[in-house]
Image (cartoon, rainbow, N blue to C red; front, side, top):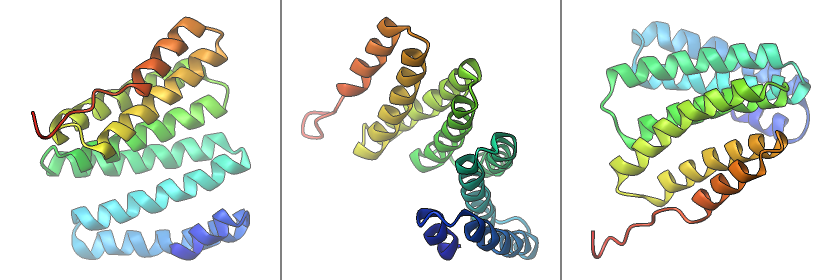
Length: 178
């Protein structure tokens, strides 16, 4: 799995896919052997997500979208079996953002915005549940930034500006007074 990350970062996409295919085999076996434990499902979702990133870099948006969707399904299964925590919400935010990113890369701005709206819902909940932690606020800023880029690409500069301003000044909370 980590070797696939190294190959991906090094631009060796075919080698990365080969390593991720091996990791995928192991992750599926772990899910089977563990009876679908949360940890094994999370590992499987991570491998699928990393494979999707490689396909997206190659421009194979349909394959990337399918792998991101498969990863999301596993993350949703985890969410159904877990307490609603900032970490669980953040994993859902990332999954929806990834789908939005591939839609944006594939020239589908409306589909991207729909995915980003779903990510935004999870990001806002994570901020609320975490008490405004830096990590959750960073996740919220990332979603708002991606949405702003789509509006900018659509020449809706007022909407883009509004989103950029919202994430530029997140509602930081002072733990001393809250």
